[in-house]
Image 1 (cartoon, rainbow, N blue to C red):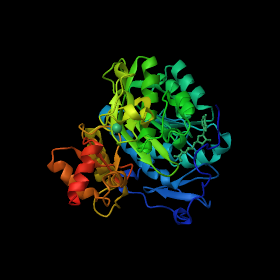
Image 2 (tube, helix red, strand yellow; image 1 turned 60 degrees about the vertical axis):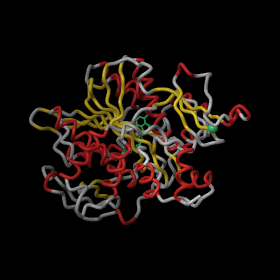
Image 3 (cartoon, rainbow, N blue to C red; image 1 turned 180 degrees about the vertical axis):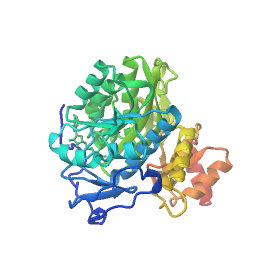
Image 4 (tube, rainbow, N blue to C red; image 1 turned 45 degrees about the vertical axis):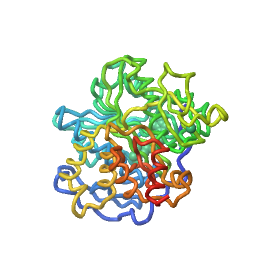
Length: 429
Ligand SMILES: C[S@@+](CC[C@H](N)C(=O)[O-])C[C@H]1O[C@@H](n2cnc3c(N)ncnc32)[C@H](O)[C@@H]1O
Ligand SMILES: [Zn+2]
């Protein structure tokens, strides 16, 4: 299980030349309380004003948004609880650890990467922050296998507020139980999967091993990638008597990468825990959730399944509940605005993402999304624009939003048959 090489991330780890900055970065004033330094190495990068070296480590500029979300959430935790101890279990060059220290104001960071040859670059990067504050250590660098680090912390009753698991493929499921054991109650785990084969339903037995979910190909595969990751965490947490809730879920097409921030509390798994099965009808395009008690009684409103039972595909068990907490996304947006990461002149990427997540947080919206091309092909019309179909759905009293995962799709509580009828009406059919 000990893997140091990416499994499903593409091999292209080269950093675009435009991000190589051979000079000292300007640090925004709110993060200026650290020793900035000048490097004479060609792999210098600046991210949100923090300068660091990537050396020969695995580093992707495209993951910057995932790091922004992590830093914002860790900072919110510090602001609300007054303390923040972070375990960055797969730190690569240490960029997240550095950002947690400087931007989230972590009191302490344990930066770990199994690959010992990364040590020099991690030490150099973290060296921008004093190793001690008074008698207290601010950071430590280790090189152990992640489960060993997490288990050691548990055995020493050395609990963390925030654990970042930035692993490859579906490996995170291997680390989750140890992470929950070494987390404070109410703490946060920021977990990653890059297993696009599983979410696409291309290796159901692998997804069964890794996430405990048998996944079939479905039109909203990239949302399934988030839902099996959360579902796997729900299962692992329940073994320990904990329940987990996603505060946000983020899909990014590079990799692909699925990232989820989980909050962990005491609690039991019940039928109401949003952990079950989902079903898609290839004939009519209808989707539905299926509870454990209703397994074996699945049918589709189109009734075509009597003639063609193979048209119904079922995946699960997985997370069927909300992908984000709307209130939490609002807090992230507010903090991002305070820091100048969104709003005037800040660029639109993060703002657009958080706004879409906020829209997706409408509790009436079910799992999945409906691709407008699929609506058009079933309705035999041109593809309606997102804004036109969304306002038509709103007029009819349905919930509808864009999806941060698929730009030409909508999330709605209107079934496929209703979307087809509305598309036809819009085209005067
Ligand atoms: C995706 S990279 C980390 C990137 C980094 N977090 C960032 O944001 O730039 C994954 C890292 O995990 C390390 N790694 C892989 N398997 C590991 C394991 N089982 N335990 C600890 N580290 C591991 C690799 O050496 C690699 O540096
Ligand atoms: Zn059907």
